[in-house]
Image 1 (cartoon, rainbow, N blue to C red):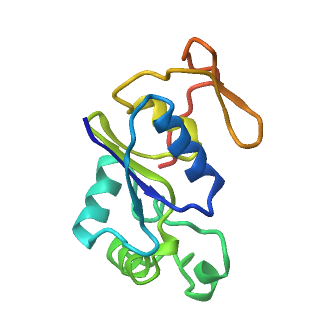
Image 2 (tube, rainbow, N blue to C red):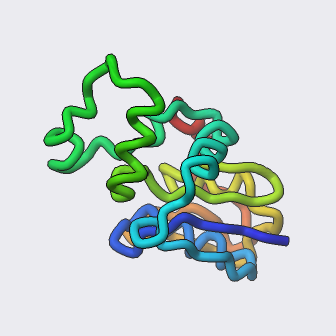
Length: 147
C-alpha cells in the first residue's frame, strides 16, 4: 500500500493532510514538491486523475501569480503547466496519490476519501477544528474538490 503526498511544510493544509495520513498508521512517501517538482507528465496526470483543470490546480495566492499575469483567461493549460514547472510554488497543495485515487486535498479532510486504511484515533486540525472522532469516524461534512 502506497501513499504519496506532494507536501509543503510551510502550509498548514499540507501539514494537516500529512497528519491525517499518519493517523491511519501509514507513513507516506513525502515529496517536497517545491524543491523536487513532479515531471510535466506526472503533474498533468495528477491533475487529470484529480478531475481538475490546470488552472484549478494552480495556487493563485501570492505576488508571483499576479506578477506573471496568470489570471489571464487566454492562457492555455500548457502555459499554466509551464508556469507551475518553472515556479513549483504555484502548484496548489497538497496533492495526495493512493491506490484509491488522486486528490488536491483542500480542505485537508478530502484525503479521507482516498486513504486505503481508516483513521485510528481522533484528529483535530492545527486550528482546533475536529475532523475525526475517537472512533475514527469523519465529523466534517463531505466537500467536493474544486473544479
